[in-house]
Length: 529
Image (spheres, one colour):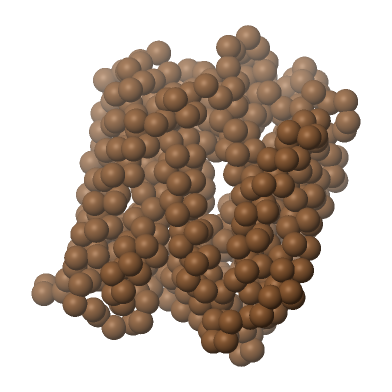
């Protein structure tokens, strides 16, 4: 396809501007050495707009834009449930989870597990998350990003992989989470504007200049792509099995991702206050409502405009060909912004978990992020975090092609693979937050049982949709964790998480906004049931 000189200039201006902004917000006062709290938690001073924008920027990347557009091409509007149900999940996280995390000054999810259960589960889950983030999430982000860059810019895909990974690394390596979060409002603005432009041009192209005409023709030409709830017999029922997206397994995936995933929740943990964190997740929930217009609609439009694509994941890059010179550069910069923001966020979370949950604990070295006071090795730990970031992106670049390149729909690949682990993760955290009798033995049983039972069900019942499998495994693992916890004694002093003085009351603004989000969701599902 290729970019014109004007398009290239727009992309270069974006790259220089966002890199410069990241370095500017990363600066420190003269004589102040960056601490672990500064680097991994943005000095615990993020405002609500940065939290909300960064939540979306971290989530919406190539795996969402390219991957979900591909699923929109193959499946239709039903894939939007991942976005719309996430909005409702964010409200639950803000009201019920964040009060406990922030009241107890939690800075990583493995740290919560140690304070609630004990050190063994912390180490187990830290290692698991590192492997998942590097070999599944990070590889998927840069692989799908490289597809888009290659299709639009016409450069070699391996070169695109290296460029994306290197830029994301350099963009955040100095400032850490602060550099990522405080620039994400720019990234999200560019992402939303660019996505709306693509949606507008695809509809007007279909409708011969009319958005309304394009929408009518699209819904008439591909009516099977406009059902939110798929019924048995639909060729994609295995991916989105009917009511399970509303009352079943999708809740397991969403609670695990938005509530207990370091990569996501780290932004809220870095808030300057609980109220600020709750305003941030409400802002993110509102943005989630419009995301399907940006990332699913172009894929559905490609059914009409490019009905013979060799792979669904080529839908979004193909739709970008409709863009005129100059505007193509802007939208391409928006796509790159999403890839870079998400990649940088993932790199920072990998560095956070390795440094604070494994390296510092192995050295038995307290950190400022942990106890609020500067420790002698703070500068060393920040350096370890930066080295970890470099190693992570190099490994991901090498592993991306063999691990993700063979997948037909990368977004669905990610969901099914992580579905082996998410039931256990959700059980561990829900019991840890709301049932004091749960202990470390029960938590470990849940972690192991989730993988074993998921594998056995996948082999024994290949016709069972993976979302239903997650729901069933969740119930089985919940029972297993409860039985093991009741059958084994709780270790004295193992639980240092205080839930007695946690308040769950939310502000009037949060409550009004939450009701608004719920009403919009009801209207959306009622319209396209």
